[in-house]
Image 1 (cartoon, rainbow, N blue to C red):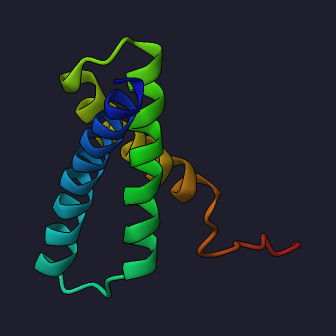
Image 2: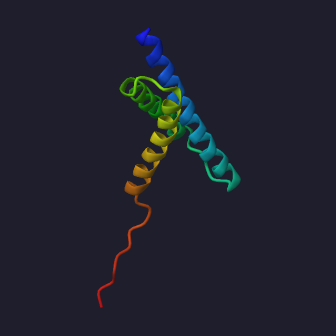
Image 3: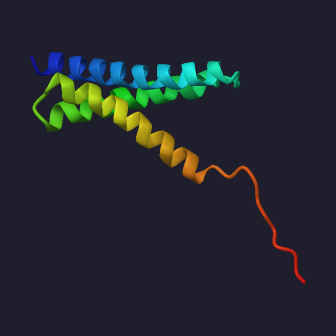
Length: 94
């Protein structure tokens, strides 16, 4: 019984991650950006782990696991983007 709850909460967490990933995927396709499939797959797997942890901690509420997968993926993307450096600006000495 406990194993079924963990598997189901993880699956629902992944559903939330897939929803979040799909929205990002459609946005990228709309502006014709390159899609990084390994990055997308990693975020879905991590959102499943977040869903599993949420299901265990909060006595398994399906809505909470889906929301945790969605929000967890969004939080991870925000952290990734905050540490990603695209350009370095050097102030010239006068």
